[in-house]
Length: 347
Image 1: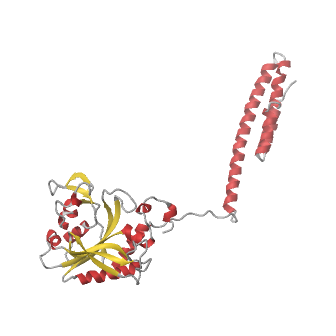
Image 2: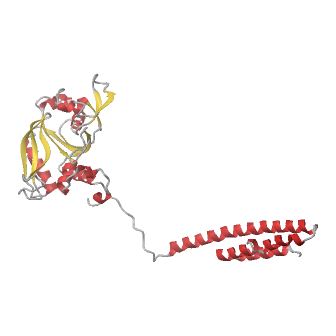
Image 3: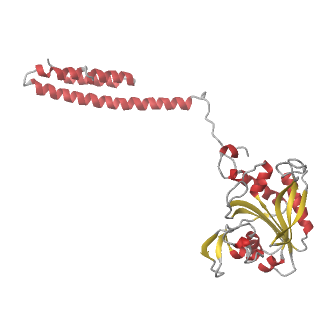
C-alpha cells in the first residue's frame, strides 16, 4: 500500500488550522495520532512492504507524525489563549455581575482616643509635642524630683538599656516609664508661657494581665506661666471631662502624692453608666479614677533652670487605655493588642 504523505500533511494542516475549539482539535489528534488513527495504520502496514519501500514509508510516517504533533500543540496553545481572552473579556464587560466587597479598615481605637483628647486640649490653646521613647535617667527621674532610692528607679520597674549616658557617667539610657520626661524636654527648650500635651507609648516591666501591660499609652499635659493656680487646674480638667465624657459628668479631686507635683491629686469622675449610683464598672462606689495631676514642683523648675519663684505651672497625666476602657466598658486591656478584628470592628 502506498501513501501520499504530502497530500496527507496538507489535509491534516488544513483540518487542524480550521479547528474552532478544543474538542474538535482533540478529535483530530485521535484521527491522526491515536491508537487506531492514521499513523498507527501506516506503521502496522510496514510489515507488508518490500525491503525497498519500508525505509521510505517509515521516514515519511515519522515526518508526518512530527508535523501533525507540532501543528496540534501550536493550535492547542492558540485555542487556550483565545478562550482565556474571551473569558476575560466577558468578565470585563458583564456589568450585571455582583460586585466584590472590599473590607475597609479604620483607625485603631487607641489612636482615636489620643486624637480626640488632643483635639479637646488644642481647642483650649494647647499644642502637641512628642518626645522620644528612649530617655535618659535625668529626664525620666532626676529632673522630675524622683530620688535615687525611689522604687521606680529599680531595674525591676524600668527597662534599662545597655547604652550608657555619655553626659552622666554611671547612668544609662532607658525606655521611658511615663510621658513626663517630655515636660523636661519642653521646658529646657522653651521659656514660659507654654501649654503642651504630650502623647506617646511608655514601658514598664509589668506582668501582662487584664489591667496591666508592659507597653501602654499616656497623655501628659503641662501649662506654665506667671500666677498659675490650682483653680486653673480644676477649671481646665473640668472642661476637659465634660467635653470628653459629657456635660452630666461630675468631677472630684482626691489628695495624692507625686514627686514632680505639689500639691498633687487624683481626679475622679462620676460613673457615667450608673450616674454615680454604684455599679459593677465603678466597683459600687459611683466614681471612676481617670488621671493624676498637680502643681509643678519647684524642684522641677530648678532642674530646668527656670528662675526661682518666677513661674508656676500645672501638670496632669492620663492613661489612654484606661480612658478607652472607661468610655466603652472594656474590662481587659489585652483586647487592644490581640488584633482580633471582631473586637476592633466594634470601635
